[in-house]
Image 1 (tube, one colour):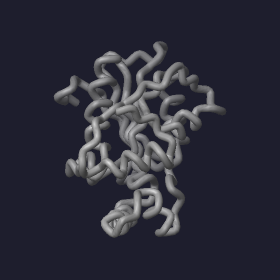
Image 2: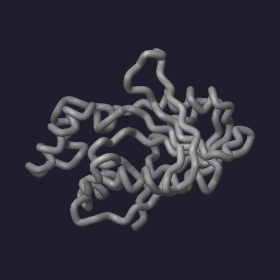
Image 3: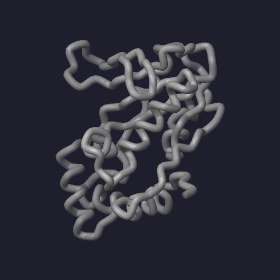
Image 4: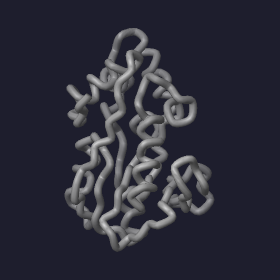
Length: 186
């Protein structure tokens, strides 16, 4: 698949071969599983990734991660777990609560969800299937690093993915940093 960042091989992963919404993997055309691979585990964000919402940094992170993955012969694993795992409908409900003054974590918990309901086991399984054993993990999220602690995949380093905040997402960034412990230095 040719993109503005380079040519990728695109793969679909699902537990069921007939699944309509599989996880997607973009592999750099020069991907080599025997190397220490640059890997971005990116959770679906329809509003940011597709529609370019300024409420979050997801679309910009995805684009930067694709560029980094291509330049470093790595990959992007696109996990289909919208809205930190709560789905698009609940995410839109959370957006309404944020308009009323709640932050992103408060909105999710107000709706009865965890602050972050994402699970990373599918990403670990995909990496294992591809023969990857050592990675440079492209993330600011400490929970993604923790997901590898008891796995057969070694995180050699955490590679930051810094997107400058905008006026529209400054509160979102502060919550990610102060409440969720993301490594954000801007």
